[in-house]
Length: 546
Image (cartoon, rainbow, N blue to C red; front, side, top):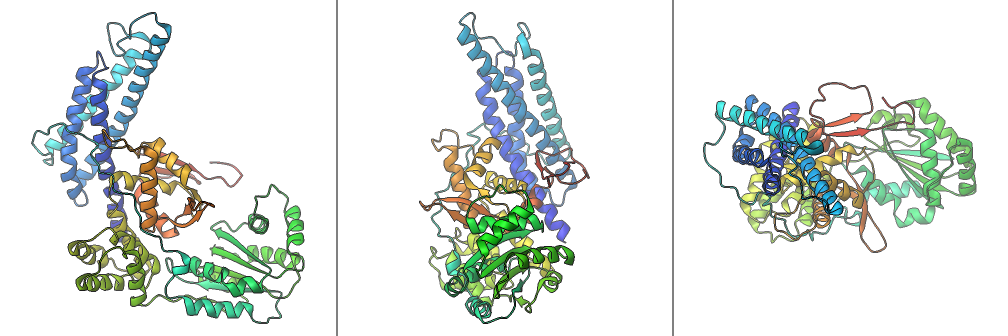
């Protein structure tokens, strides 16, 4: 069942994105016909084939999960659509380049860039590429007719980029001061940390399943007023999969000094840490630890003991693993419990506060909250999805979705996240989300940079005739993903503008699932089929890149 869920995620985005690319290409081909002397017939043929494909896609998307022939056809159409996108883009560039060149030289009229009678540099190869695209599209169209899932109707060419840009989201995001159901737990941990101890370095693991809110819980402790008074220094380091002693020490130093460090020598880092922590009592948070190698932990612990000999230093470790907890603990682990059903409903209610809750919606909403299984991330994500659903029928559709039949507690979050992904408003928004899989887990995603990436990939095209600029669409998409809790841990500048964010590990797993067919992560030897790869992510540990 898990394999089927992941498979349907990938197929869903293929059909949605293929449809978007096809619509974009119809519009593109239409614009180019008037300036493509010598290639008009080929471009009209491309436009006609693409228009038919667009009519077929809606029907194909409904059938693809059960029909293997439709899956293969969609993949074939996607390949041709991407190739056509590249060729038409190249065509437009070459057309513009030659017009500018001719205009600057003022020596001759604009050449017909695809004219076989006056071929100039690059003309014949360009015409051949366009002809090849037309032939490929005809073959794909013939297959659709052959296997009976083409709609046999004529489709009028209309505005092909007719996605309605929704209003900018105004939903307020759930911040850490509004966290529900953890107040007693936080107070218990704060009392434990601030009580008298004879230990030089105490280690308390916070253990819990994915999505339970371990990081948020640790932040509540970290920012507690009594903790700030008790400890001279508080330090936060996100460890994740790379438990590298030198990197962690360097990030501890950067957290203390609030600036990046250029130090490369571990001895130099340790000397600077001694200066910063000498005579100070500190609390260190090691967030999201996966390392189960006792020796690696002992090395880091030895360095920390050597830096500061004070009594009363504390480390909080957040982890999903009981093995990690057993290796690191000096104080018995604190196992974070699931929330109650009413607490999950309280989270959802905060997210949907702009919707008038009728008794019927209350009943349906509470039942949906029960399905969250006590996991706050599930409640937040579902609340973000429901906040734009005003009708009873829309809430009932979420309540009765077959995704709830997915078995197994350990994997339950993935289908819940898939449900939220399905309800994203447009294929381009889904594509923007899937693109974020190229970032490593726990990576701080810079908002402005991300929007520039989306623009460069062509994901933020405004509707034809619209005066909305791509940056505004990118900002709106970012806000929607944040409101759906698909982004989190946002940081703001002094003007209250969001500058960066992160993705929860499970949300990152979802992004990987929906993008795996076309994204290559080059951090190990190549495996499997790479014929459909569109994006490449290279991760280097400073050694040899494969």
